[in-house]
Image (cartoon, rainbow, N blue to C red; front, top):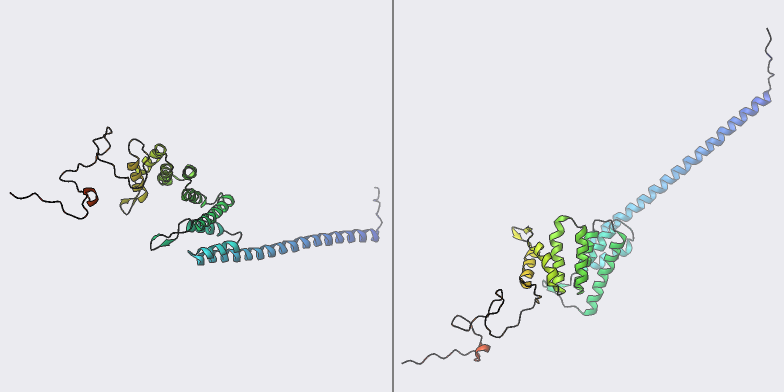
Length: 284
């Protein structure tokens, strides 16, 4: 039986292999340690940034809440907090606040043309940022309606009708009748009664009620339809001038003027006697 050849013991070879193994472990440990240090540092930085961001968010929402209906405070908050979740709400609130003319004793307060132009320009700036920077925000549709109202305030009625039509396409079904009224109203103001009629009819047929009564915009739609009439006439909302007396018209829908008979009331100017009573018949 052949004897196995013994491998001579070489301590230097084993020691060198062990040193290489330990060195590799140490190198790997250093790598792992470095990775752990970087991970901890990243976590700390993220935590600090999140804390700063939360602090900014809390400050923005707090400033928005404290601003209330003060346009000056809202503009200051918008200028201070450039990017936050409260910013679109600030922009929308400011635009909705400034699009209405100032009130005095419940009535619109007279304002100069340059003051009104500056106010509407600020509204346009707020709406532009909101519509451009937050296209997926749920306030986008409401901002689009405000843009239509802005065009109406400037007398750009056809543009306003087009904007409201764009909003109606993407609006939920419950908003359709009100937007139909907005479209029809602007077509009416633009002198386009035929286009206004179809939208106003759909708005007037809505069953929306407030406290058991039709909503104001439904009543307004019915009023505009009555002013347009069956012949799609474009009638001004101003009081019509008094017409001279004449016979019945060919149009059966036209109400003839009252006859100056016994039941008609005659003003002092029309009778030719200012403040004097008509003379009575002499006695027998």
